[in-house]
Length: 283
Image (cartoon, rainbow, N blue to C red; front, side, top):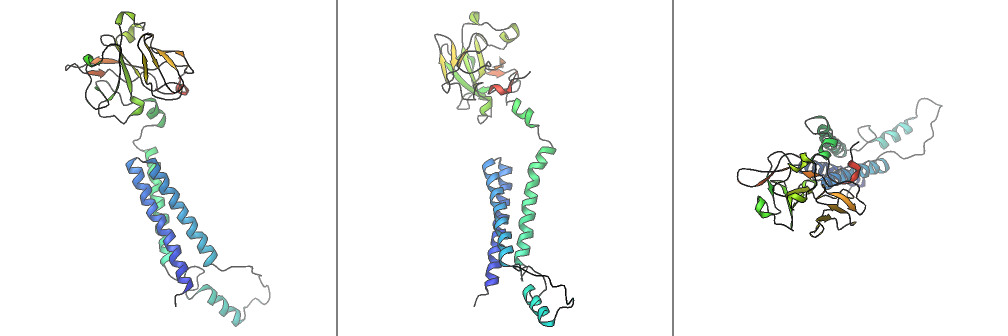
């Protein structure tokens, strides 16, 4: 006949085992950079601990109520025998076997080790969050590539069209997406230093709208303006992507452009200001 107490101990050990496996899952999420996996691992890990400890408290520890007797101070033999029977053979008010205790130590140790990963990232060789959010993947000399990963040459940008580009090797960098538009250089009304950021009338602006972060998806050729389809913000291409309509209050950051020896468009540096919504506006 199965001992009910042993069955409870196995269920508690299984709960702590789930916590241990969840800690491994959280560690894998951290290594892979998967925030959802990381959060799921920690959630399951602490849930397993909670279930196991609650069951341990309700099913294995002595349950009250108890009344402390002041007299006599020496317990009668029958009381002592009852207490020893309640505590178990080894005299400890915990599980009779070592399995739940060992699994608890394993689960707490695994979760503790995994919890050190994010702390380590904050202390050693990791850019500050403010810097990481203020910079993109563009660097001086980085080639512009299309959505297919092929390098983009100046001749690929035709008048009246809009071309989305990314830093080479970083098609996953959504905050680094830029749009290329070719206009008549004589009509550009940019400051002299920013005129040098154009190539034969090709100007590059961030594709991330400064209102709510939606991707710029429309180019109004006749008006030479970029438009965001989410909330209808409109930006003047000729005047540094200044907002001329809609809720956006900040211009699209301009990407400094150049050409390498092979005729491929390259960045001359990162965007001069953070891309995305207007709360990044610097004083």
